[in-house]
Image (cartoon, rainbow, N blue to C red; front, top):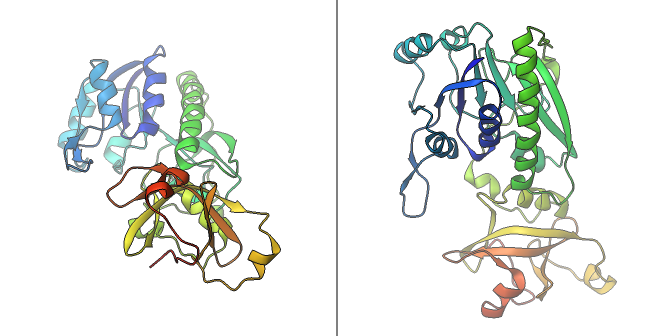
Length: 316
């Protein structure tokens, strides 16, 4: 089949690679425009654009799909199907109606749960033990179309957002290949989503990654996992921003520590094995950090040059 691929972040790359390795022809790629993304505010291309350019595929980077110019251009390309994976722009109805075999989307959740831009982060933040990937026939709106295939993926308690994203991308690319076989054969099912079960995963605001030490250690751990590798859950120490990239819920603190009155965020133990802070319920051992203006370090390496004392309080 003649296809057009629309996608932007690293999650979409394995799907484009799978499509390029298939019998289907990729006529062109649509992705988000170059944007300032680094500390120096240099303009950087999306991972999908970099792959497309490497493979000599025509790339288009419109900032919007509104208007008639893009639909007219797509119509002239005569795609059989359009594949959309984490593109970042809402596809208008006029474009959805162009390919005779429809527009197919790969979404990183078990729809109808976690519709929207941040399904992976939101699932981890919610403490989910299972998520998955869904392929669907696209309809107007965000992630509302009839489903084709789904695959469940377990979330181990220490899995980070980056690790889960890689796993879902690998499963999603396989699911896409199977979905396109069904589409080509005219055998793709249409499974309506149960609207009563729909939940939403809107784009995350930066301040959502601020650690509230009054919450249980388990909730803090899930926030830290969701922020790794980007943007990083953060707190404050002596007035400076202090990112936490890894840690663990402490299960075996001794009785003397548990019986000592402490404030949420107060440091109860400071050692190369972990920076243990009190929370609203239990204790959390910080394992990897990044202080303002510095690089990511294991806590033992950080403490060598930046001593943190028992009794110091995070969040101030």
